[in-house]
Image 1 (spheres, rainbow, N blue to C red):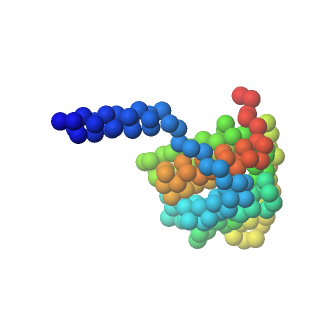
Image 2 (cartoon, rainbow, N blue to C red; image 1 turned 90 degrees about the vertical axis):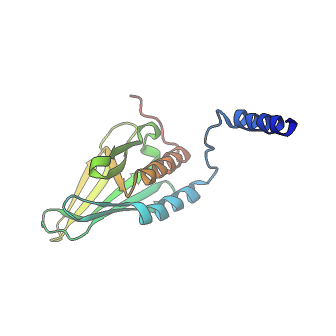
Length: 173
């Protein structure tokens, strides 16, 4: 009987010790975090559109706190539709409290949406259509698509970490 009581008490101690513990935040550096984001988007930044086309979001680092999201769409049929979009993001301008998940399971759409702290349209977005026409737009928010809800959640945590490491400020509202 004593071994059973000891086992139950041990289990209760373990349960109470782990109760209320939060997931630990990784201590990875900015370089490690951005490298992980680059590798992760190459593997998981994919969404099949309702047109049957495949959209791929892939991050690469331009400088310490600047990353580029290169969005490519396969088999573009409409000449006016962008086949490549380049979005340049200064991580220090983004609001860590404005990174959010946009999940629509019925459409199998798993996105991470983010915006600038000051909500101003200063994110550069360059598009190129299949007929070679290029345009530049200025936007305040953007989203990236992923292959699953879990992938979107994991990327959002890394993005928030990178924003914080670059000194991003919360949006006031």
